[in-house]
Length: 51
Image (cartoon, rainbow, N blue to C red):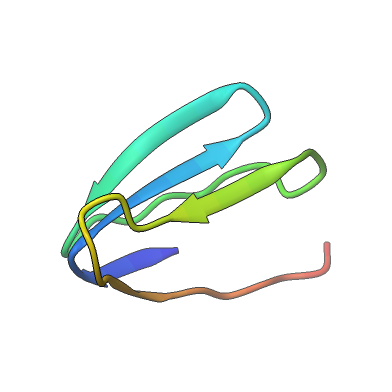
């Protein structure tokens, strides 16, 4: 996932990180996950890959 604008809080399992515009994160999709915009509106580009 790449943050386009705003701030995103990404949680995968027990790990949580903040993404700011321009940041990219890769995370395990085989566990509970959540994506939030804690400071209002945010936009992201997300690609799912079946591997």
